[in-house]
Image 1 (spheres, rainbow, N blue to C red):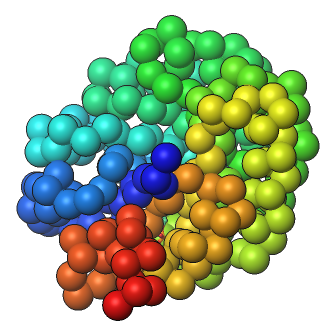
Image 2 (image 1 turned 120 degrees about the horizontal axis):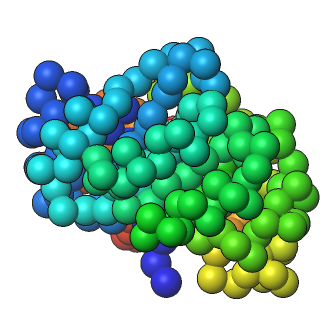
Length: 222
Ligand code: DX5
Ligand code: ZN
């Protein structure tokens, strides 16, 4: 399977969100990554249900919702109702992770777990078989435009190894500082879904950047 690209609308122009979503809809993007921040789990607040529901009208691409919030169980149904197709919660925010994952699945959504940069992959040993996706944070969550943390490559290799043994269909997503320079190395390390915020929206030609991330081999050939 070719890898997937999930541009993050955190880096979009919120004054022109409809325009940016329509651009994503026509682009080679596979999913739309929706970053929800509560000012508690992370030191920043992004946006909530009304913005997400409004955004839902302008693209048919799946919403990959990344919840950077404490006690996400309170809001799972509300995120589903606002248009989530996939919901990823943070390991560090869920004391009853197994229950939370089952609740996401019961809503009919795909379920993911995100790990902060300091959280070892090993801690997923007893939950990995229940997951559709694991998101490896390659920056500390809270802000777009940060520098990629190199230890991510090792974590991806560890996760890939564990998934080959216990859940070969697991999707492995990387989030933070992904761009055209590191994507090929990240694919080689085992990742197959890539979030990109500033790399896409700060570029001169966002749809072309998305295509370059989706098909990096074409760039190498040209
Ligand atoms: C960070 C978010 C990311 C962010 C990525 O907390 O989870 O999804 O939007 O932004 P870039 O690609 O700019 O690092
Ligand atoms: Zn994210």
